[in-house]
Length: 390
Image 1: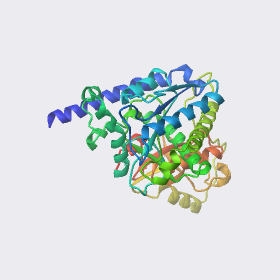
Image 2: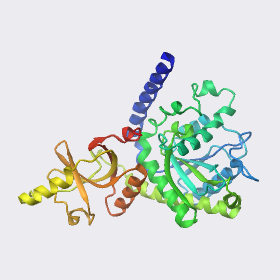
Image 3: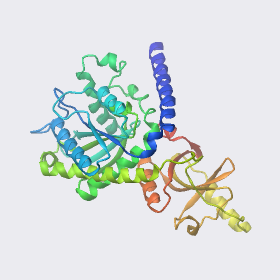
Image 4: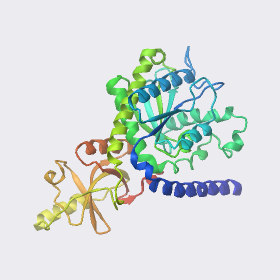
């Protein structure tokens, strides 16, 4: 028992040190201001690792076909973007090698393509980002994809006794990617929207789970489950070259939207800005009657129980009246005070996925620097802490 505890403490320490050193390299890397330059596309499985099996096809082949088509779209339409593949043929690539390829290339985005397995009635697409699984179904997907390491002769040494079938092994996985969670969720939401709106696929949503291949990458990363080979109709769909092209083009359109949005923000500043928030200036304090003070106090100090996510859209040094005219027409704005600054938020979401969708909508409304904040029983907590709450 002591060895198990010491091993967990050791891994927490290792990951914490990694996060600290990685965050410094991210914050002070001048090249990072110039937008998306390198993308790594990772076709899941390969070689003697066939992945999940359908009635007449396997995951490794479908994943590779879609990956190559996606890469071609990016290469043809963005000459300034370098596309790196973890594999372009039917070969086996170890999970940690896939991440090493992305890290060595100093990639700005990691896109992992897979195909799902489940009951015969299961259908639809889902996109994962790194995080602790919230449901048994999410854990089962992670277990299946991570089980590829069992096909590696030296997996016990390479992965420090990580057991893909042990829930305890997933405890330490989510911290490393927490720095990129917001960007990963943003891109994942765009992918799912394209699958649903442009290709007509059933949307199973953006989810989080502990994937080794995502855990070891040092950039925003997603793992896309393009459908279920165990569903006869979806297997037939995914094996059609035309439909594979539709799926690849949907991911490409999501990439294009993400890249253009990202590049517009990454203009190299002459001096670093202290805080990326829209600041609402108020030259004179608003006049309040006793009744309006009470109404607003009741609205903003009402006890909130449990874990909730909000989207922060603005700050001000003086309290602003909570009317739509003051927030680009946005209704139901609330605030919390921290450090003598009023911080204005929207939403009362129960999951990070729905909060991310709200964030994207608010950005479209002009709040381009909106970001997600978490509260537990009315107290502000970090996102990484929030995602560990079951």
